[in-house]
Length: 265
Ligand code: PGA
Image (cartoon, rainbow, N blue to C red; front, side, top):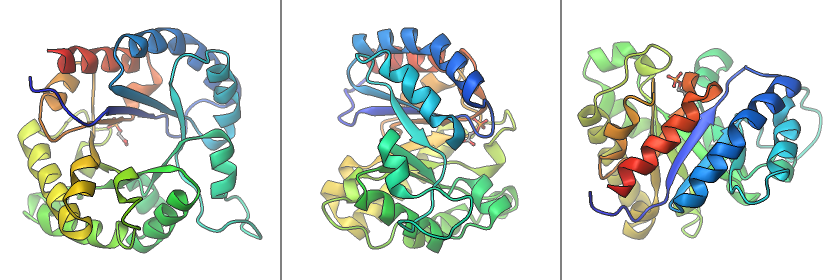
């Protein structure tokens, strides 16, 4: 396989699983092996994204293993700096503990009414505070079946990814997650996902130029497992995965291992 120029990212979205105690226990279970794998292969980054209330507990475990390079990410944040926003967390609070923040996950969009405009404000706030946003986009089953995927993706890219400064545009990470593939055990085909991901890169090229589009990392998400990650990683345009269900099990370590094996071939 041709050497990929972009460092791969395997991010684990723990969703609403593991409070501080269980999160720390699970992190202690996987961090030593994960860290060892990442020492063997440098061109991969792995990011753990526990619930907000468990971030400090997982941070502490990572700090006990300072050589591991494993990063920490939040699953959401608000775009305002501070103030009367009960229940929200601010970018500065996230950046005290994390390098990364997932934004606009389809569950945030579906259950909590997040729009492309809100996601865009959050992404801009993340970049202002030195956080790496992983911005999620993807189509619903009905849109997929109606052949509207391309149109939906175009609209989401145009609105969620608008107005980044030229120098920060390459720091953005996009996760293409077809909603019908999330948590269903029915991953997209590599060909299908690859096609949409290539379109996203083209659109980004039109918005921010070829350098930013070449550096942009685009992940696939939706029922990623140790059994299918290799196929996705073998695609030239797919730079990693956003993993849900398999990220709260030992499977996550196996996914990172399979990713490395594929990239080393
Ligand atoms: P899944 O979730 O891997 O459980 O399908 C992916 C995601 O929601 O990011």
